[in-house]
Image 1 (cartoon, one colour):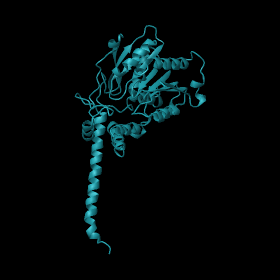
Image 2 (image 1 turned 90 degrees about the horizontal axis):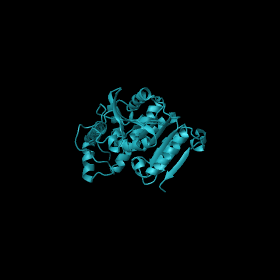
Image 3 (image 1 turned 30 degrees about the vertical axis):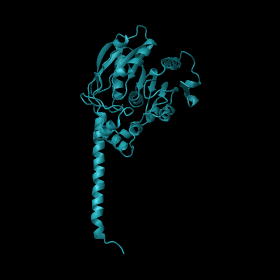
Image 4 (image 1 turned 90 degrees about the vertical axis):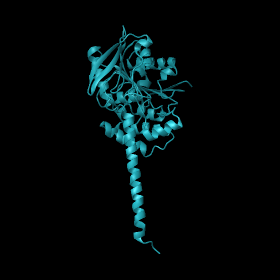
Length: 347
């Protein structure tokens, strides 16, 4: 005997209301998490990285969202024995702060760009090595970080215009028309977008720990928390973009790569939990110019310099020598060679 529709209808309505409540609650939670992820708190204790957070910390982060205080510079080049000057330049959303480390006989100028929730102090060790290799170094605090104005981040989307402003200053103040660009993690996405979309023209580019897609990097954070990524990761990408004026699903270094024709070196750590080697390789495969890809064994989501400084210096020197044309380009940097050069350290 068929059930009476009138008897079923209250249960269906209750189920519908419950489903709607869950959906609205998830969207609200995603909105709150996206805001916490992209807006820096004035001060206070930072939520530990997913790799190091305790179970109680994971629960707190899942309920309240990550707390990311405004990144500060508690070290300067002077701590590494380097003379420097601090320069303020105009960005499109406020002043940006640069550190300029002038080499007495420079081979060129390198602009170094830090990662997410960091300031320019993060790339100080890399700057030290570039200086030792004969380069004038310019380190920039992206908007919202260190000594630059602002209180939020777009994970490299709007920050690409900070690279534009920095390169313009380098052009004018240091008489360098085509600086070398170095980016770490979010900084890699930033410089790739600056070249692909904002038409910055570097002599060469070095990108390290680069993610392929905005969605991928958010999904990996959920994986490190041992929490299912679907559907919250997609909600976070949506709301993070909405809150900051861009489409998060279109902020993809793997897409920017196809517009990059300058010599490019991709560095990656084999043990990186935040970016898979296959994802960094996808960015590399998309590059249209001369290119090299080097994997450092036993390196996580960190500057590979920290793991093997000698191997890092060798890889950098070989790449820069080829990019500068100091010797004839071999197959490894010939854009017609297909895959480019693939090398590995630490085996």
